[in-house]
Structures are given as C-alpha cells and as structure tokens.
Amino acid sequence: RFDRIYSVNVAMFWPDRRAAFRVIAASLRAGGRLATTFQPRARNAVARDGEVFAASVAADLHAIGLRNARLERMVLKPLPAHCILGDAP
Image 1 (tube, rainbow, N blue to C red):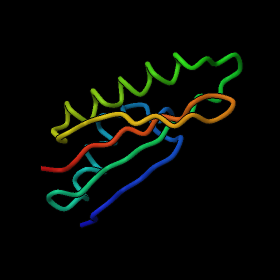
Image 2 (image 1 turned 180 degrees about the vertical axis):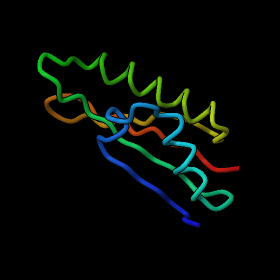
Image 3 (image 1 turned 90 degrees about the vertical axis):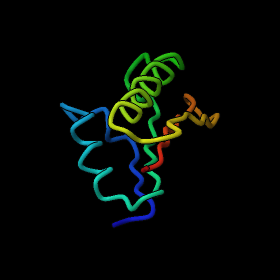
C-alpha cells in the first residue's frame, strides 16, 4: 500500500477514468492521498478546458469513494495546471 500516488497529464488518455482511479485508489493505504495533475496542451486550448476537465476528475474521485476531493490550481504558461486530490477512507 502507498501513502501517496501521483500522476501527471495521463488521466485524459484513459478510456474509463473511474475504473483506472478505482485500481489506483485500491493501492492506497487508509488515509493515503491520490493526486493527478492536468494542464491543457491541445491546439487552441483555453483555461476553461482545464477547469472543466479538472471538475470532471474531481467528480470521478468523489464517485469512487475518495474523501475531500478538491482542486488546486497553479498559474503556469501557456495555461494553468490543475491538481485534483482525494483521500482514501
């Protein structure tokens, strides 16, 4: 079991994000934290794209039973990065 699991710019490639997050969360110890970060990099991406995706990932983490699902935003260029965190029960 892990205390922390972190991923960067990969969740958007998973065909079934909730299933992937369930597998990852199963590797967390009680009270462990999952964090995944996303920064839009597609052509013509805008800041809102990151906000929408981050909100959907936060909903995924909540739906699979992680607690305190929340977003943190870091101002970067060309667009902000969003870190979505959730804690294992």
